[in-house]
Image 1 (cartoon, rainbow, N blue to C red):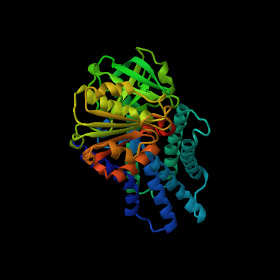
Image 2 (image 1 turned 135 degrees about the vertical axis):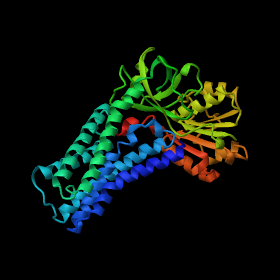
Image 3 (image 1 turned 30 degrees about the vertical axis):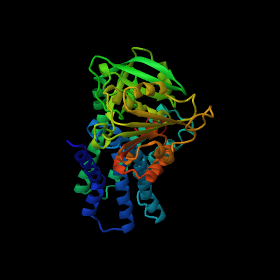
Image 4 (image 1 turned 90 degrees about the vertical axis):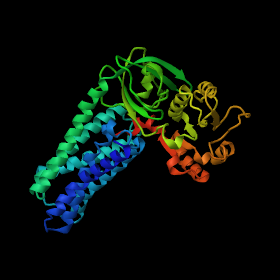
Length: 440
């Protein structure tokens, strides 16, 4: 099935499940106090939206080529906050208008579920400030999610005003069944699938600026096919049943012999700091591939411009290595930004690739140690325009780096007149900051 078709099916299904409880309520509308009805309607939509946040974290391979994974996770956080706001509005409206008419555990269960939602938002936003470890936060997050579902649903069913009506009740039974199936898929079925194709550590190589190159070999299978520019979720240990996996861009060629995988990982949190301690033979589980970028698409054939900032160079290396291994002679321009000469990565590898393919590298350093460095400062539209060929608008632009860099590149592309269909943004936070904000 084409990715566009799968994308349409996904969004239709998502919005149907989101709005179905509200539509059922409107169909059987009970003519009582309008304010009470509106508050219930907002609560229904908020609860449905909160439950549907299981979909973005389910990591369904079937949708991997149809959805922008970076966009999915950013949307996940925005929609989670919106769900909290909607659910908060339900009691807020009733309190302000003095319409609260339930007491005892029925009322208190609603407050418990609401408190769980608020605590999820607060602990997610303030995790670093309160120095809560990622794994600890994720465990708390899962417990709060369970509390929200159990106590929130108890409140909804025990109030039993709209929930006593068969249409509304069975719609909610459907929603709950889907949530349960998603939880089973996330915690049981998907780990089983990942566990069928384990990898073992071949080597861990130290790079500048607390970056490590992790090289993996298939353990008892032929490997996992992927495309340069995509990402994988990895975990270490003896079992695929873990609380969380962590996403990293592939850094190696997608035609590497023997099914080898390669990742460039920078120390930035609990998991990434453990990479340097891995030993040859240690087991690693890889959930892949995810991401939409494809070097074989027609709009990349005339040439590619690869722009990387810091550890965002990882997917760029995957693309460059793939082009080199396949002797692809399309023009390649690489703009790589870093702090100084001591922090740059893979310069020798870029040079080796340039001997095989039509590659031109421009390393831009924010604070170069040498006054003679040709490209100090930042990657700008003026710099790109000065070195790119006249037909650069026909090239495809791939960018991966921290969020400030992406915002700067958006402005640069406007200045350069690059069409939206000829650009792809990968977010460095997919690799580094996931320990700051993953909601699973």
